Length: 81
Image 1 (cartoon, one colour):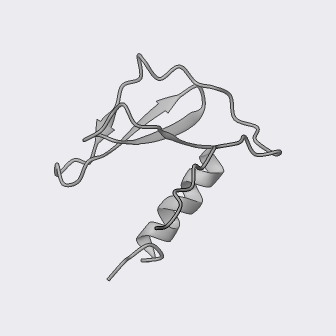
Image 2 (cartoon, helix red, strand yellow):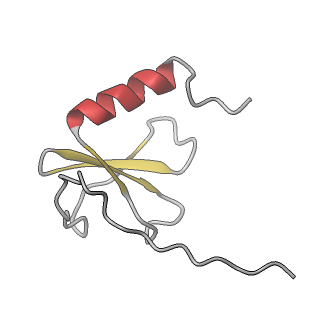
């Protein structure tokens, strides 16, 4: 029988993003309603979450990271097909 492994999350040494209060964030979904990804602009950062599970953790991006992510997505960098 395989042993289960518990993974703990540790802050990255270079983590320079604040703990944002997302409780009052105005979440936006895609204009065509496809998918469950939602984003919010909060205190100069971009938060992204799974709208189908809003209680799950959000990803936090700086504007530069968000730009790189969007560029990569447009270029097909994250296509799984």
